[in-house]
Image (cartoon, rainbow, N blue to C red; front, side, top):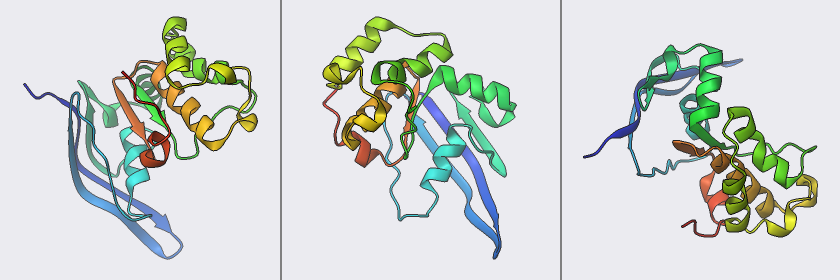
Length: 180
């Protein structure tokens, strides 16, 4: 039986610019079934990153609804969305957002610790599968771009999320060994 993991209905988003209103999308509908993946493709500036920001609860839609599992994201306040995001979402940002003052080991553990579900055994599994074994004591500035991407992916996976959102996933996932 197909169960919807994510449903976005009637999403609208407009930004104010000096030139006037810029409508990113209007009446956008999207469904992602549990256990499936979805790739958003389009030209630069067409709203892919904006949509991911909305789905992650990092921005508010002008209209519409977003349901993740049983939760209505747009009905939550900022604090509720932050807690939900920490506990249920893994996010790989386009800019990766690694914490410069933390080494690989601590960057991987950061989100899981905040979410209260840090699992050292799972973290070690991720380190091995992402081929970060020899890099755990290094800091982000000491890593190549691909190594930084793998740390960002590991950090997203460390919380054992229900859903992973990745911005520019082709650039990120091309460097990851197959996870089995």
